[in-house]
Image 1 (cartoon, rainbow, N blue to C red):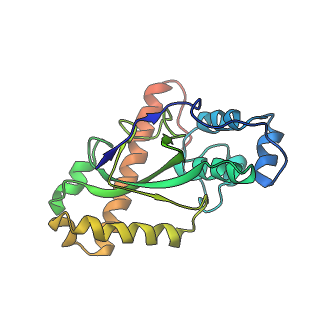
Image 2 (cartoon, one colour):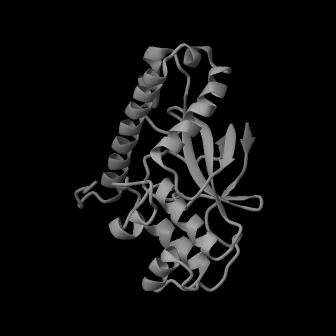
Image 3 (tube, rainbow, N blue to C red):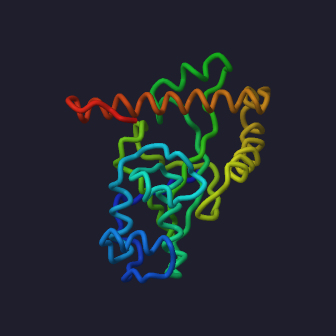
Length: 217
C-alpha cells in the first residue's frame, strides 16, 4: 500500500493567468477568477454535496457545490484547456470505520474488514491535491493511503466509473476471501449502504458546524 502526503493548498501547483480557452475557463473567468491556483481555491471552498449529474463537471457551476468527482473534474478540464500537466486520478482504498463512522456495522454481516471504495484527486508531478480536503464530506480524515491509483479523463460516465470499480474489485477479491465470496450485486448493495452512511455522517458534521442553521442537503 502506498502512502503520500496530500497537500492542503496549492503552492505545489503550476500557476498561470486564465485565458478564455474553453467552456470551463469561461465559467471561472465569469466569476472573477483570473489564475489557475485561484480557481483551485474557489473550487475547494465550494460546499461539498452530491450533484444531480456527476458525468459533466460543469454542473458544479450551475449548482454551486460538488464532490470529489465534479470538483476535480472541473479543475482537470481547466488544466487541459491551458495545457497544464494536472490530471484527475482515481484512488482505490479500503473503506471502514476509520474513514467513515458506522461503516463497520454494515460490513460485519458479511465478515468484511473493509469494502473497496474510490476517491479521486488531482496529480501534478509527485503531488496529490484533494479539493475536498477541509470540506464537510462525512469522512473522519483525508485519505492518504491507496492500494491502486489510476489516471483518468476529467469526466467519466457512470458506465466507465463502474467498469473501473469492477476491474479493481477483482484484485481486492484475490486479497480478501470474504469479499471474493460475494456477488457483484451484493457488493454494490453494500456500497450503496455505505454511501448512505457517509451522507448521514456529513449531515451530523454540518449540524455540529452550524447548530442554528438547518441542513438543506
